[in-house]
Length: 220
Image (cartoon, rainbow, N blue to C red; front, side, top):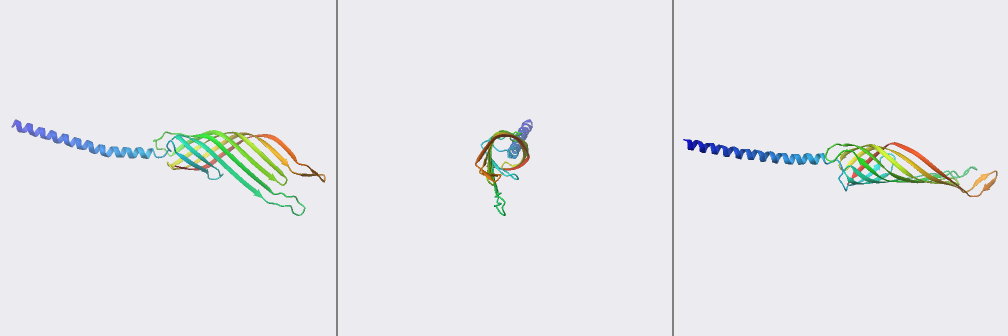
């Protein structure tokens, strides 16, 4: 009887161990994929190191190219340009008042995004700084102005990451520049006479604030 009981106890213990092993294995099979899926979900919002991005200003125009050295930082190269022209030829004794303007602006800097990879937050505080340069040319009748300027900029705002490949941001920018302007006058009527070509040079400086720029980004 004691031998039979001992055999039954050993058999029960063996079955319990097998059941425990199966239960633990089942839990691991369920937990590991769930953890992996959760990690992928929370890590799917910030761009990875080596990611390139194209960013466009929705309202004011212009665009930038970014290269991410980490999920929190990227180098930025930006360019914006504009051309305007109005045509008002000389009529009824009035002079030719046609006007046109061309401007280019380039920037090189670095941008930072708050937060760490994997925390799953959509909204990121965004800030950056760098160098900026611009050229503008304006003509009006017989007069033309050319302006070159260079300086620095700082920006701060927020970016909402819908996915790792798409974002929308609102960023303000402050620029401080110093420049040089050359004004050329082809001819000017003074007291019935004509004054020959004149060139006037001047230096300029300025501080400008752009409170909100809406930026749409695509990451690839």
